[in-house]
Amino acid sequence: MPSLPSSSYLIPILLLLGSNVFMTFAWYGHLKYKHAPLLTVILVSWGIAFFEYLLMVPANRMGSSVYSVVQLKTIQEIITLVVFAGFSAWYLGQPLKWNHYAAFVLIVGAAFLMFYDGPAPAH
Image 1 (tube, helix red, strand yellow):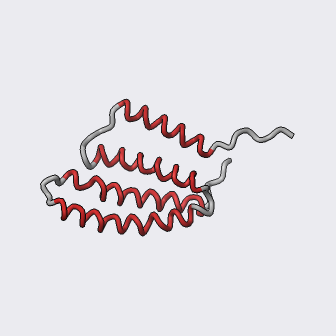
Image 2 (cartoon, rainbow, N blue to C red; image 1 turned 180 degrees about the vertical axis):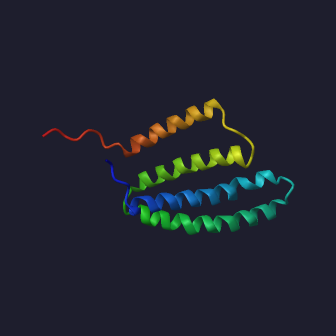
Image 3 (cartoon, one colour; image 1 turned 45 degrees about the horizontal axis):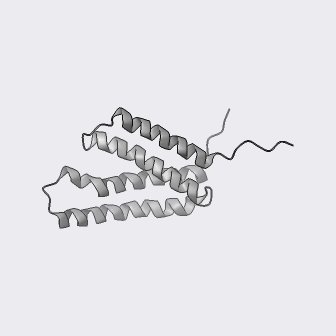
């Protein structure tokens, strides 16, 4: 039976997930309020981004001790896509189409390659 990942691997991912929720709202939440003044939207977005940074910086600091920087960035990008897909459908009312899902599958395939070390050398 496979063991669960240790907290040193899991905590950075959970922090990245939380930070991406904040950042998605900071970057795209205002699209639901297009009547709001641009300066107001920018200031609110900065305020939301502050909380994103409170999670993202520790996630990267902790994550870099167990993942390569390339792997960490790949994890972050996959999380960003998952969070944005849900946000787009749930908050903005713009569900994904088949081609979005197909593109996402290709991106996940690319992410797999980031973590693949190849077969073990023969002895």
